Structure formats: C-alpha cells, structure tokens
Picture 1: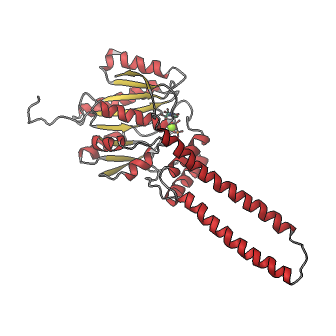
Picture 2: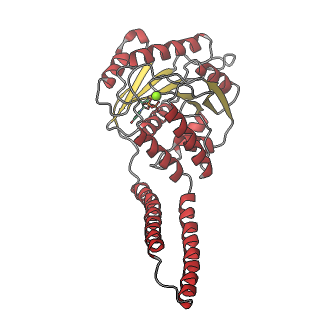
Picture 3: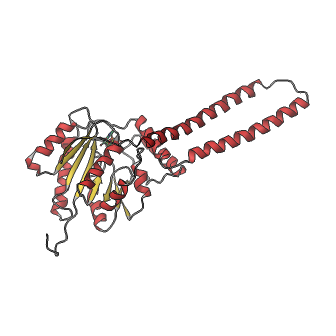
Length: 325
Ligand code: UDP
Ligand code: MG
C-alpha cells in the first residue's frame, strides 16, 4: 500500500498489568500517553501504537477507569484493555497482555508496572536499542536506594539463590522490558502453567540489550506483592527452571546413609568395649534431625509433584472476560 520509499514505523504496545490500581491509573495513563505521543512525534513508532491495560481481576474501579480511557474520544484510541475473569497474578496478567499485543500485530511491546516505579523515560532508550536491531531490551535498575532495607536484602538473596540453583536471570531486572515480535512469538511457544517470565525471557537467547534506569517509589497505592507472593515467585522461579533441589535431596540422602554407617560402627565399638547406654542426647538429636530432613526432602519432592500435577492438567493460564480493543 505505502510507497517503498517510506519504511513503515513499528507499532508499539505498552502492556500494563493492573491489580486494584484505581489510585494510580489517572497519572499512569497520562504519563504513558505523553511518552507514546512523544515517540510518535519523533517518528520512532507508528501512530497506531497503544497502551494496553490488563485488568487482573481487580475488585476496585480499575476496569471502569480503563473503560473510560478507552471510550474517551480525545485519546484517539490510544488506550485499550482486556480484563481477566479472575485474579491470576502479575506474571499471568502480563503474559495475557503480551499475547494480546501479539494477536493485534504489535511489532514490539514494552511491559511496565502500573505504579510507574520503572522509569517511563527509559522507554526511549529501549526503542532506540530495538531500532538498532535488538530483539529484547532489558530494563536494569542501577541502584536499589528506593527499596526498603528488607526488600533489598531479600531481592539480593533471591538473585543469589536463583543463580546457585541454575536459573538464568538478569540481576536487578524485573518485568520492565521491550520484546519484539519475534521474541513474543517464541514466548508464545512456552506452554507452562508455572510462569516465570524473567527466567524464560533471559534464557531465550536472541539479540539482547540492556537499558539502565533508576527505580522510583510507588507514587500512590500500596504494593500488591506481599512477602508471600514474592516467596511464591521465588519458588516458581527455581522449580520451573531447575531440578537442583531434587538432586540436593538425593545427595543429602547419601550423606545421611554415610553418617549412619559411621554411627553404627561407633555403636558397635562402644558395645564391644562395654560402655553403658549414655547416648540419650545424641539419640534424641539425631531422631529429630533425621526426621526433619526427611520431611524437608519430602516437601521439596512434593513441590515438584504438585507442579507436575498443575502442568499435567493443561489448564488455560488466564481467561479473558472482556476486551476493549
Ligand atoms: N499485579 C497484578 N496482579 C497481581 C499483583 C500485582 O497484575 O496479582 C500488578 C500490579 O498492578 C502492578 C505490578 O503487578 O502493576 C507490580 O505490582 P506491585 O507494584 O504491587 O509490586 P512491587 O513493585 O511492590 O514489587
Ligand atoms: Mg510496584
């Protein structure tokens, strides 16, 4: 249709998962629209680029606000949204949005949290890196000074644990990243229910780039990621990429058998030397220790079995209740 002289500009979708984000949507939509219009004015992205909100089963007015943004003619169709039938968690909501953007023929997506803790201005650099040929551009935070000491400590533990367990991640990079069409098509091939996008995308390969930015504090509302959800994410991250914990259980089993042989020899020697039964404490301690280790090992095996159970069911990762496209 268009003349061969003007190469068509890429259509960018900014994908924003939202769970009970009524307090931030006003400001967020305003800033993302300004960013998108700026990129269009610079002829970096197509005027058909849009912001796609994914309502992750919010119980507040989030979906009504998204609808109002979508319906307002002054935004010229810059906002669209899908609403999931139920709260499926950040990773699934994000995945739903990315797949929707892929279906809508987006050339690239940028995923960003609704609270805009990630620097909206870093999107320019991401788009530049994409235009330079990168398939995936990771947003990496260059400091954690806006985090609480606790979050900083746990995040550090999280990344060390991940690498010790053999899960590939890009440290200090969360889900703020640009993905092009090709990498999204690859992502669509991943069939697992137990989604850990950071690990999947980091292990996919392709031409990647990094953009450094400073992460701000949430400007309104409170975190939708309590410690329990963070621990869930960490366990998903490890179990969906690595079977090392299972191997550790096996090794621990070997070690205990070895120790018990030594104990047996010791017991036999004591018996032969006629030393009386004054082994109460050690006996008690070892019963608890061995019992505890067995329970822990069973727990780890159970984590995997539970995940196999979920994967075997092949249930849909999300169900879209409503679309405003
Ligand atoms: N989120 C979601 N579903 C959930 C929990 C969170 O879609 O079940 C979204 C949330 O709206 C936000 C993003 O995931 O856009 C990150 O959440 P939050 O900012 O609360 O996490 P934190 O920055 O505190 O880790
Ligand atoms: Mg946040």
